[in-house]
Amino acid sequence: MRHIVCFGNELHGDDGFGIRVYAQLCRLTWPKDVEVFNAGIAGLNVLRFLEDCSQAILVDALANFGNVGEVLLLRPEDLAGRPEQLTGHGLGIPYLLEALKVIREPQPDILIVGVEIAAVNPFSPGLSDKTERAVPKTVQLIRGLLSE
Image: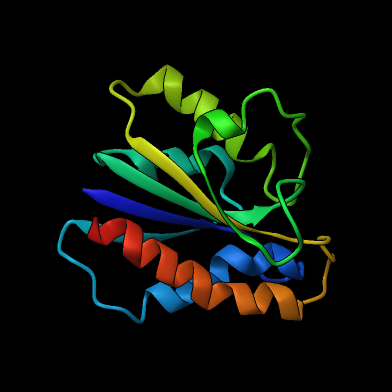
């Protein structure tokens, strides 16, 4: 199985990026071995979405990886050694990946797809223009990754 796990909080501006991508992904037809999940701000509860899969694509808003609005494709090792920041969804993907190492062998092949955002705006629903424009690019990237 291949899983797409989308993170975010749509009530906090650009932090809702992953949830917007999730909505777009749900409109598409996927092969039977692909499942799409809305992880929201589930924290370590997301580990259940990473069971029984050989590949996982994690979708989230990113900070300090590129230019605002840029769609990025990262591997777990790209997150190593970076300072962890508390975000709207707890300790974030690096913490989740460390927990996964402890409870799951073998590890699924993990990719992180995201967009560089300028800021999280608490209690401000809706994406900024640059982040909104990144949604279709992200969906196209994910479709390409799963067709390989």
